[in-house]
Length: 204
Image (cartoon, rainbow, N blue to C red; front, side, top):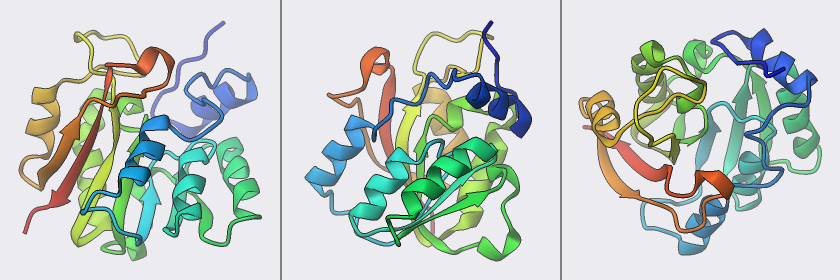
């Protein structure tokens, strides 16, 4: 029986315990590998926080590339997986926390927020809180970037919850300016053409 995640940590932990974390592809997302190879001018090494980091594959990739990475998840099993990576990578550390209620001392601390299948997992009514969390955690010139999923016709089923270009722009336009937006060529499996790589800088 499928277990659906909610906005509570224990529901996601139950999915891990059941071995049903279908979003975990066991490796970094191919578009992130491509992005780092491309080295866009807005992406330099710096202090990065990964929202909803899951098993830590993406976080570990960026840490290996010289970023100082804090990988956040609220499911204990996910945090344990991140800590396993961190044992061999001094640039990576795990933080068990809800990304919508991060410790206040982390405010304005990061150059980057990394997104991958976190935004789509949050109940739609909480998406404005995601925007606020990202802005609060970033420095004044910080960048939120990552893979936003699922660009599909709207429905009520989820997670993952569908989104649209119009919704993303409306949610973020007051606080962020878009600096890059494209459909990745090498998305994994059924994600092809259903995700966008988006980079947004905090507005002055």
